Image (cartoon, rainbow, N blue to C red; front, side):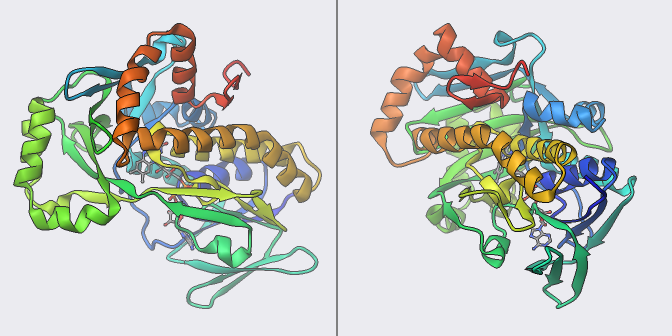
Length: 401
Ligand SMILES: Cc1cc2nc3c(=O)[nH]c(=O)nc-3n(C[C@H](O)[C@H](O)[C@H](O)COP(=O)(O)OP(=O)(O)OC[C@H]3O[C@@H](n4cnc5c(N)ncnc54)[C@H](O)[C@@H]3O)c2cc1C
């Protein structure tokens, strides 16, 4: 394909990674970001082998590994010490592992690389309209009514809560999950420092997790993210209740967490993250394509969001390099991504209520069956491969491709 003028909206995972891949192909890329001075914010995320493969392609694997924490195992137990999940990456292959990382570190690595390439960045610009001419030219209009003209195609990577789906008129559904999570990134202390993502469960109403989150940039202090499942409509009540009751509950589940909890002095240090389920009938409309959470946000139950966004970016660049027209590239991209995105949307939608809901029966079924499933080699391999981000269906994996 000839050189195209590409506008990308959003400099998160999908946007920055797409900018890097497309600029490498020789396209003229402009990246729009609504935040004036984008900085490294956020909680812990898990990078899976699927996402790490993309970061390797971008030459960022080593940098990420230096700031992240290797995670070898996901381990979840109930209050009665029953094992619900025990999945080890190496059971699929010795070479696999997850990386626990501060979301901001991933953002910063990608964004810094963007600054070193021939990519124009427009920060502090919130795009709120996209106009496509009959000839296919696209113009972007900001909330301050500035117009940016002359793009051949637009990549929308502005996250789960974007309102550009309505602005473009692409058929979609967005549902907010009734449950989300409170987050806190702490300096690691006496709590378990092994390479395990650890969850403590009590039926489906309580889920406490500790994710190794790598190191602080300036002093190499190890970090751990704490997450606490909560109904979105209970957050105000939770905040009004203060910290002491909640801390007692956490200590009851995880007595080793005392030093970590001592770092939480104000209820406002716990940040609430809502979860969304976004479905697009197809990811493109005219010369506009949607990538990452803007196209297919899921609950983070399977820890796939950043990974899917990274794979989107690489697959889209591949489709561009293999096609003669934008339309053909969009179609090829949609075809290549359909299986994996549908699988993870289905799997997170199916699994989330077993961990976050009001259903005692689902909690009971989970406790009865999942621990046993982890010990059946065939099922456990499917679960680990799903966790790795490799599945494109129940019986289809991209692992050896
Ligand atoms: C609590 C929680 C835990 C998570 N845990 C994990 C995990 O363990 N593993 C994992 O892989 N994923 C996880 N995720 C999901 C992950 O954070 C997202 O899937 C990922 O960040 C999606 O990347 P994105 O680029 O699509 O969107 P985002 O990272 O949301 O980036 C969107 C960007 O667009 C900008 N923007 C928005 N609107 C506009 C506009 N109109 N104009 C210009 N700029 C705009 C925003 O400022 C932002 O920079 C988690 C999410 C949550 C909420």
